[in-house]
Length: 183
Length: 148
View 1 (cartoon, one colour):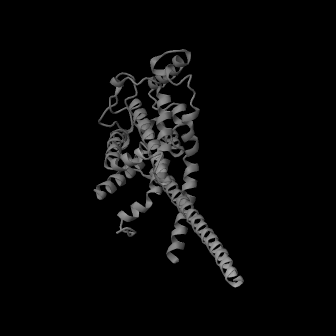
View 2: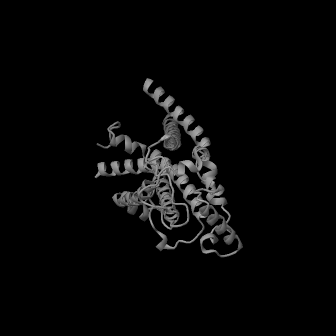
View 3: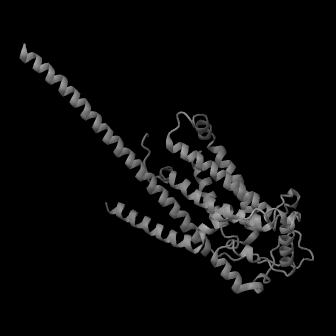
């Protein structure tokens, strides 16, 4: 019993942390953005086709020329905490170190600087872990409830069937005894 | 075989979580290479469970139990999510040169695709794990196998 209670408390804690992480990361907005992305400006950027495409392309090249990695539209697609880090640290942090691999198509464009991320900071990963764990826990309990409901339904059905069999058996038995008594 | 499946699933989960923030774990080069490797791991995971896939595919509309059908649909969604995630990742890759693939589309479009598909896929991963939790407990020896 104590084990069950402690597991339930742990599950509730995971769910609460998961929900707060869900809100913190803007999980819902970022997940459904895939369905609300404007199709008119979506494919034209690289190919340069259409008016929207040209403007999109121009915007990206403009950012690249200034040596910035993320524009406003890209900033919207990253977690809030990361966005804050980017806004605070800004360009200085970007220019701190280059990673050894290099970036493709960057010669002479002024955007070769990128924070290689040699350090390991797992704070954001923990928020994602919380969301992941909460999805797991929620599914686990929903699955258990459904199977429990099914079991209850099955038991109820079994009980009803047993009752019907008993009733029919009783009817047959009473008719038989009534016949015997008349005879 | 079951241990291989378990450690493969565990490594996919850990790598997936590390990939959710591109800059938290050794930066973009790790993110891009590990993103490609997780695709290979996923294919391997499917190959190791090929028997189950074959069985449910054949009997999806006839004999399969409800839970198997839910798992099957979830697996299809997961596969679609991972495919989209890798494809969009390839389109916006910085450290690996995939320009020869000529995928087209604006970086903004692919970035939205990449972020959204990865967020949805992580949620689907969580649901997948929840539905297979009993199997995980069995592998960790926390739960006895009923039929044994």
